[in-house]
Amino acid sequence: MTIRDLLSHTSGLTYGFMERTNVDAAYRKLGVADQTRSGYSLQDMVETLAELPLEFSPGTRWNYSVATDVLGHLIEVISGQRLDVYLRERILEPLGMRDTGFVLGEQQVARFAANYERQGDGSLKLIDDPEQSHYRKRSFYSGGGGLLSTAPDYFRFTAMLQNMGELDGVRLLGRKTVELMTMNHLPGGQDLTDLAQAGVFTETAYAGVGFGLGFSVMQSPARAHILGSPGEFAWGGAASTAFWIDPVEDLTVIFMTQLMPSSSYPLRRELRVLTYAALVD
Image (tube, rainbow, N blue to C red; front, top):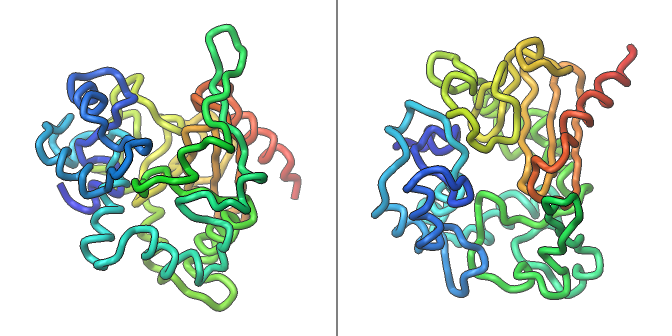
């Protein structure tokens, strides 16, 4: 397993919520990446993963997974800093993202959105109350889905990527680094149709879409059956959130909501259609 495999989700790791194999069942039984566990850390997670089998040989398939959490631990090992400290010093503070972090501050509670889950009958169930949220106090700084942020803060991050690694005189990445990250890194230039198992969770269509180093990458809007541009890169979150960056149209879209699962409604696809249909010049 290489760092490239981790960044492109071809590592052979998985998520417990997939609920389709004995491997992800073991993740659930052992509480792998459970953010609610008291005293649990990224190192604890990696030590557990080291004792479990992989879903497939690294580099041969694509599967959304805890790979990004493993990368968070790698940052800790290489930098000698805790992940939250590293991100604050190297990314959040330089970009002026003062409203972003792993733990919810007391002054932020009133602005923290509740999270809901759609039930089988279409009703909504409150699953994360801001007043009692585990985000107010926790030890597991999840690299794969743990940062709390606001739209203005996240826009600064996406603007940095759209501007090839630089924002307001602060350069975090080189231009060629961003170019490399947003290319399709799937073996042989294949798309997700070729490498992802049918029915496995993903945040994007399979056809016409590849995967780079941290992002899905649009290869062909025609094959994806959706409006868009070749080269746009994107991803989404479990609570139906989404972002994408279209270098061709000089466009950044950020969509923040709080509804699980992300398959509840075709929000992202409808948003894309509305956005691109509005471009007339």
